[in-house]
Image (cartoon, rainbow, N blue to C red; front, top):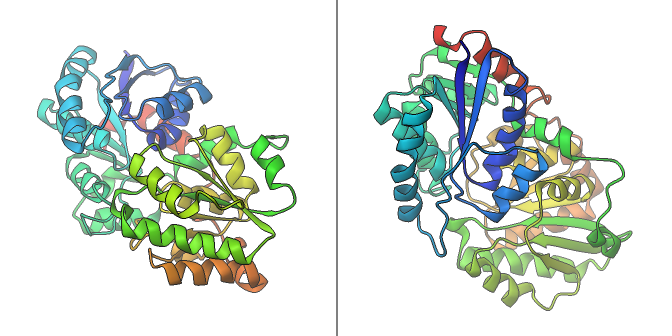
Length: 369
């Protein structure tokens, strides 16, 4: 009898990292793979599902205009119980640190269904940074029975917290697997025609804790650097959050060296990253993705749950101070030696076989863990 493995995810970043795992699990004859999406993100989630040809078996469709963390939490909790009771999975896989992940793990705990945590063990140990993600991942860590850690440092965090060593597997990060599917040599996009021979900067900025003055600081630093470097152009696929859009319009709206565009599909995002000169971001996943292409990343946050990249030299944590962002952005554009040190550092996040390792573990008898 096949073992039922159910994957639950709901946001674009989760989908990017879980869809390759879905497709790998579906290859395994001893496993029955069921996919449930919560729709925590809607349009952006659907784009990723289409890219990886993943069709959900269940869609909770919880997203609504102006949703809060309360709305997301109660919406998922109310709907997922019936799905879990109908499917009766042997294990439920969740990813990382989203509210979808936390609430699904909580529902599984209530129903005493084993939870497998993909990308387990990332920590800042400040539950308000990133918010609410750090709380989510720590809470899921308490519940999860099977822990698929992307790095040795993530494993160490779990061991330090008292997790059983036999429940932890270091697999690499599934996002590296995803990029092998998406990045192509003959990629073309109209925005790249606009960039031409200029050095391209790829920007993402949307974190809750950066809303307000920190985000204005970030955008002002970026504008100053662009004004001083006419050979540089920037592309910023902007988040749907109206607060983010208002700040970007106020600080960058009339800057002709930056194109602020609507959110792009994962296929475009990965190919933009592969072709940029460097990236400025407050995102999590991009801290893992860009180093795979040898692209330096300036992380516009005060903390990161991915210190492996900082230690390896691929990431620089610059915070949200206008002056520090300006300093490091300028340094990487003007100082070839500083740029080369970051561009040539080793990527600590895996070899592109994380999904195979996770599938092997599940197929060969996770019940013995």
